[in-house]
Length: 243
Image (cartoon, rainbow, N blue to C red; front, side):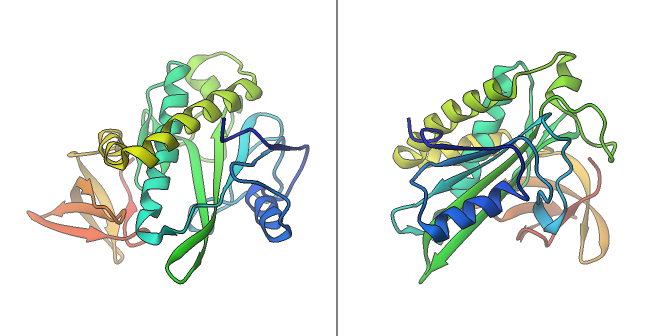
């Protein structure tokens, strides 16, 4: 097993991604090292948002990777790989989920998981990667209405350690496919996209438009059809309004 073979288990930490970054800078970790925390005091999400999580109720973890001089052009594939592993993990517990581009995970229009990837890049090559995961497991009350959890979806409690183990197994499966058949990773990611080929509201340059997601290119850019014209967008250039 690659992911989860070496695990740092923490009662409390500011952020598992921060802890992972410190391990990398101190050279105290190996390829595939996982950090698992019961509580985060300063968890981070996309767009510099705070990740809300009650102590001891959710899966809060990060994984460290030392790619073998992977080009930055391949980074989207690692994002897709992680997203697919999360879909498969939820499916293991009989929960049907979708990926909200680029890597949030949604169930019935509500967010169940957030992902934060942070990379150290030099001369166009990736030296290290941190794959951060915040998966809502047993939490049932949230500050925002568009959040859900495994418990809310199934009406039962889960052992966080069991969910963690299932995710590790799935990650180990998908990273093999990434190394051997990367085209399958992209193909399956597209199949799992939330709102694919569905008219929805998006905010672009401060203006709300109606568009339809058509695809994601090899660089991870979102292809939207707006008023019959297809355009590519980078992360943070487009905001989902209708969820």
